[in-house]
Figure (spheres, rainbow, N blue to C red):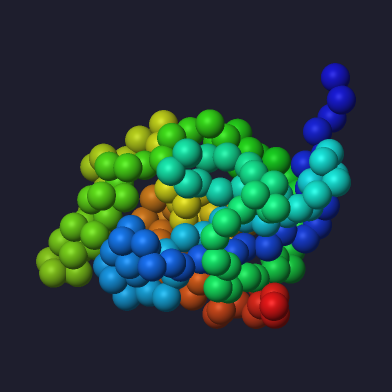
Amino acid sequence: MKELKVVAHPVDIFFTASDAPRSKYLRAVTDGDVSHVGLLYFSLDFGAVWILEVSARGVWAVPFENFNYNIVKQYRCLFPTDKALLNVTRHIGKYYDYPGAFLFGAWLLIKKLFRCDIDRPWASPRYMWCSEFVAEFLRECNIDTKDPEAASPQDLLMLCKSRPHLFSEVQK
């Protein structure tokens, strides 16, 4: 069997925002500038740039040319990523975490109001959301990050901004 050569270094982490109600909601509950996060990489198998993300379709990979979001920030990973990217592809096919996305704002509000650290009781290994997926990728790279199930796109943006020795902003 042919060994899969998914990626050539580097991998970029991209962030998006839009005027869609879901995007506005997530930015409001996280006090953030972004509402979505994913990975951008060059596939050696397909000879093209691909996106690996969690969207309404679930965890999937899509050619960049078919990607129709407005990327507002992009950071290049300055550390080895090949093995981690291969490892997180095991999530392809998982469903989008609709219950989690719906309850995320209420969960954040409860945590802030009562200043308590509670787990997401609805979390399931069958579901993921975008920031959980990227946080897990970063953990696979041995980058210390927030619990993947509790990370928001804004949390990951702040991580990239605060660690210039690990992430370099890609200028458009």
